[in-house]
Structures are given as structure tokens and as C-alpha cells.
Length: 395
Image (cartoon, rainbow, N blue to C red):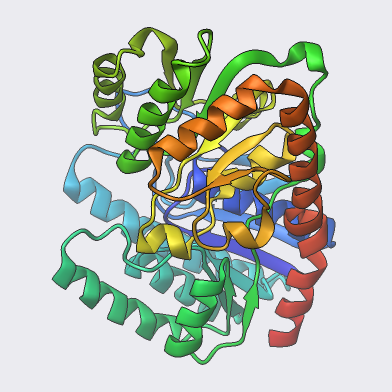
């Protein structure tokens, strides 16, 4: 089984949730014996900022990857950006035809694309290679489009393209139902994925007492504001509590706004905004946290999605405080495998943080049971054979 992952909404090998999803697929498919190549259709690194992905191609964790536009750095000019899309399409068509000519064409092109152009590019690549196309549905389509009219139009057009795919992977119950109503392709439920073995729990002496960690995309402004407010409440009863936030939303001023908000709440000196870091650094920070936090708000997109970072949080064996949104309560039980609190309830989230910090033995036991959930429900070795079997059923 040969699989190509093609998408326009992720960086590689470092990035946020979409990148974690790609890493999960890569680990799962390779563990099941599949051959894999990864193609990023658009640059991800902004000019004037430190680059997490300086190489336009290479090998990471045994998998070949390539920014098919020829660069990982995003140009300043709009015309140059549009030209890179043309270069990506030409390069992917050439790679597909060359692979077909030497008998190495993919069996499946897995589309990890949330835009019309990204999904169209994956479909065109599969057509050129004579492969099947499988869509990864990990969030509601058009969630990035703010205008309501444009969002509705984008969603209709995206669904029209999705009907041309041969299969759909759905990360949640809601998305399974959504695509059952909008596309005839066979579906497979594939939740968040993580290679649990790569997040081995640290020794007790390596845990940072009273430190809460959050890692993610700072574009989730409501999520981060709620986290700061909950932390400010919890800090009243935990004098030495500190909060480390990893991630960025480049060009938005998110870090500056969050720093100002923390100062207004009186906890500016206890909150560290570290910016974007590579996956290895993020993994070490999460693994050494006293508590990891995920205050997902109640929105249509949170209900439909399932945060990739939750799987990584659980895999470390550290205790997790998370909101009861979407499918999360299907996997985690409050007080047993995590602190699962009502969504949009800052006071309840603060109580969860304070309880987790206040009782280390209980928190460690809950974290260990959370890791068992990750092994049972999210581990790549569980889902690799399911993915390969599904792909084989389509070819």
C-alpha cells in the first residue's frame, strides 16, 4: 500500500494541530507497513520570523516530505503567493506522472485540505497518478471563513468536491453524520492519533511542580482568554502556580494581546508566552507539566472537531483538565481519566486546575488512567491496520 498525503493547511515536520494529524497518519500507516510520502502545497513560514520548517524537502522520521512549491517560506507579495500555487500544481502533476511511469504510483492520495484549492489539488494529483482520493474530515469545512455568506458558498462548493472523493475519514460523531448527509463516499471514523510510545512518562523528579501547560494555535482567542481567566482564579488558592503557553498566531499580535490580558487579570508575572516551538520542545514541556489544560469553548467547530493535542496530552501521562465538548466525554470520564468540566464555565475549569495542582497523588493516578485511554483509543498502532484495510477496500 502506497499513500501520499497532500494538503495545504499544515507545515512539516513542525506545526500545530493539522501537523499533528499528519504525524499521526504517518506513524499509523508506517506501523501497518504502508509506504508514505508527504506533500505540503503551500508555504508555512512567515518572512521576518524564526522558521520552524526551514527545509523545503527532506526525510523526517523515515518519511520523505516536500513543499512542492519549492519553498517553505511565504513570499510577501500576493502575486508571488498565487504563482506558488501554480508551481505546486505543476510539481504534483509531474511527480504523479513520474511515479506512474516507474510503477511507484500511490494507491491512495489522502487529502488533508480545508480549502477548495487544496482539495482540488489533491483530487487532481490522484487523477494524474491513477489513485483513489480519501478526504480527512477533521473539522467542519469553511471554519476559517468568517463572512456568513461566503462561508455558506464555500461549504456548498467544498461538499461538491468532496462527492468526488472515494472515501472520507471522520474524526468525530458529528462529522460522520455531516458527511453521511453530504457525500456518498464510504466513511471510517478515525479519532485523534498519537504514537503513545513516543511520549513516555517522565520520572517524578522531572515534573515541574505547580506548572500548567497549554500548547496550541493562539488563533483560538476565546479558548486562550478562558484559560487565562481560569488560571487567575485558580492562582488565588495555589500561590506558586505558573502557566506556560506554547504557540503563536503569526502576524496577529496574539501574544501581545494575551500578555496584556494576563496583566489586567493580575497574573502577568506568572504567565509565560513562549511562542511557537518545535514538536520535540513542546513534547518535553507537556511531559514535565504538573497539569495540562484544554478549555475548548462550545462552538460548532469545537463540537465537530477533536483536538489533536488532547491525544498528546494524555499520552504523556500528565493529568488533563478539559471541557466536555463534542466527543470528548465519549472517551474521558471526569475524576477518573481526566478533569472533564462543563464548557464555557471558567469557574469550573479553575476548580479543576486547583484540584489537580492541590492533590499530586490523585492527579498522577488520573494522568496514568488518561494515558491508558490514549493507548486504547488513540494510539497509532491501533488505527494503522484499520486505515490500511479501509484504503484497500477502495482500490
